[in-house]
Image 1 (tube, rainbow, N blue to C red):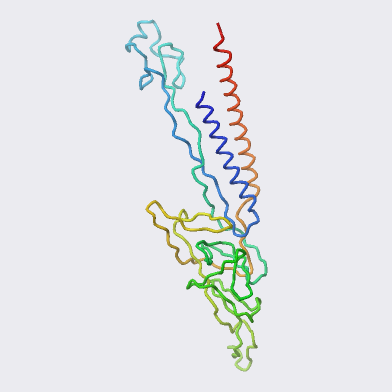
Image 2: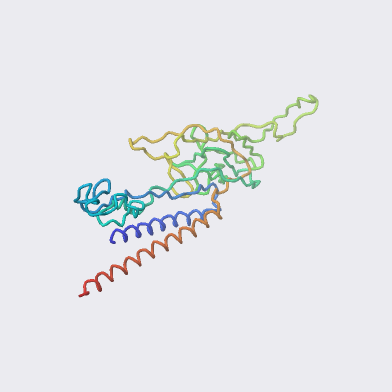
Length: 310
């Protein structure tokens, strides 16, 4: 009975932790670039339960194989059902007893979130597998950037966006945001001032600031990892690389993802699914709580009533 209390209590703890994960997902349903978390549970090793002197095959205890015949009982026991029998000389193995479960890990779902057009030239969304590198040990999928007074492109935490050489991306201060062009491969351009002839009509020239004459300012550095288990969430929608069992930290590699300018990647949390999971977890928690209450009542009766009989 004590095992039953511990098993039910472990189930309550598991469902409480899973509810915390779901609540965090719902709280970040509107967070740009947020990736959904999922609590993975694992069962404790089951305990093999047998009665004293039980045989491996669940046979007769302390009797010869022909003892049933000697006692005028049927050799073929018609009362046997799924390992149990009404024969008083047959003692079946009880089997395995589950000891509850626990949260083994909180896995991150890296499924692509939907893209939402904003029209802001410095809003960048990643379509594919990759992370923005910023001037910190972490990376992010949140592409809501802005320019500070010095012209550096930063995120909401004040970290500078880095280029392919690991240097902060800086836009000339005399350039307007509408003059910034970000290509799908991560190139940052500004509109140029050169006057060049059109290929179709050599007489007609390109006016100042036309997008066809542009200057490369920087190349955004996008990185990815072969093993997603090498990444963990840091908080504030940041990810960092962790060491494996041998102490080696996974090294990032260049990503072939596409950058979409003027858009943001929304959270990949599905609110309806999370609400259904929340209701399910609440019911499981209540069931385990009821089991704890029932077994507590039985223990109380055993202590206060059974001992006083006679």
